[in-house]
Length: 305
Image 1 (cartoon, one colour):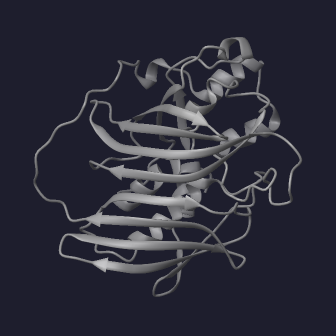
Image 2 (cartoon, one colour):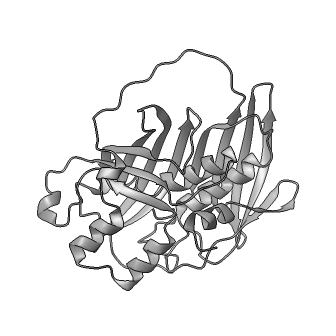
């Protein structure tokens, strides 16, 4: 498989090794830690594989407890908490080398009729066709891509296009509001299984969300002055969607203090319908002496975004 979207589908196709136990691959990457979206997406696959197919997930709440190690399989243990008439609840613990690195609780709801309302999008934005890919924007600014970035770009399963021009210098960052928006879609078809699309979007939801926290602090591209780690992650799924069609990820950070930053995201389709709501808190610390587990000081949480 050469298409990164196909590789993502394969990454989300867990091996069932017992009734409620699944094993996921963790590719050998140059990254210091396993990408948090990968663990969240795989955990949601494990939960979904133990539910009835007519009950899509409507919410998840997760904590990143330890950094995962690339190249080492991750085992997902599912607890069947409740199977009700309308709702199903699952709890998933991710274990790597005998240590819990992540846990997730997901709730599934059998669709039913109800009333509708939503707040409009906070601003009008250009369409994705009118924006450069993030790879093209970086390549234009740098006059080319370093080899490491070129390899990373070829493996990227999502096309990402920033609505606002990237800031490259500290002077451009000064006074910037803690807001960001990107268009995203998988770089190839993901098939027709709704669970795959939900888990692929869960993967993508961790890719840019903490940008909103970083924007007032430093340029998003270039040398980083802060170590970043996702602490927790919550999502609410409002409407059906396809992750291989364009969606707008509108992000903002209402507060950052005490080494932690809170980010909120709203995911819309091209018609402006709200599909998914996301909230995440991240740890941001100035770089300092590093521990073997990839954290600073006495920190033990997290998977970097």
